[in-house]
Image (cartoon, rainbow, N blue to C red; front, side, top):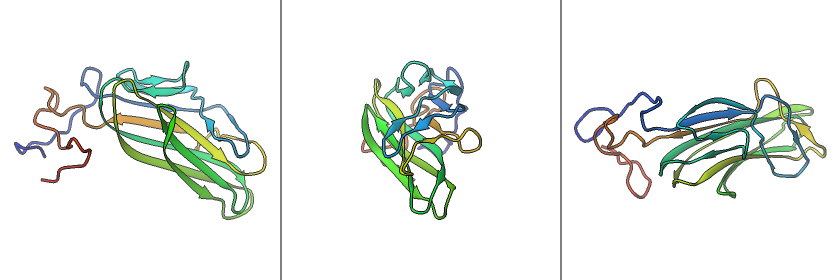
Length: 178
């Protein structure tokens, strides 16, 4: 709830001021062994605000300065015991966060997820990179664990006619509890 007791829930739609998009990779993409590889998205699942770029740069372009929730996932197929699959969020070409998982038995897919919030500026861009150590190239999965990334602006409604009230985020980026 904001300062006047009302919630700041807002329907996110074209014209609401918020940006959100999801891109995924349906076709198999070869991921070389022990090499960080950028995911070349081939599907724009949705894009409110025009931030997804699945054809030119395979990235999300930040249009408005604000707080963003970024989530992503990919599955590394055919990994053997103690071989790893990793996932990373890059902002403006630099690593910002990453996660990894190890296969626990032979020839098993390993799914790796990542989620974080970021304070981003207009002009920033967000990319998804993946990595695997199986000793050979692996293709991304093309069904239930295909690579995807979601980007959602989480503070767009604050102070606008769509959301009303004041933001619950401080300038330092932490949540202000009522």
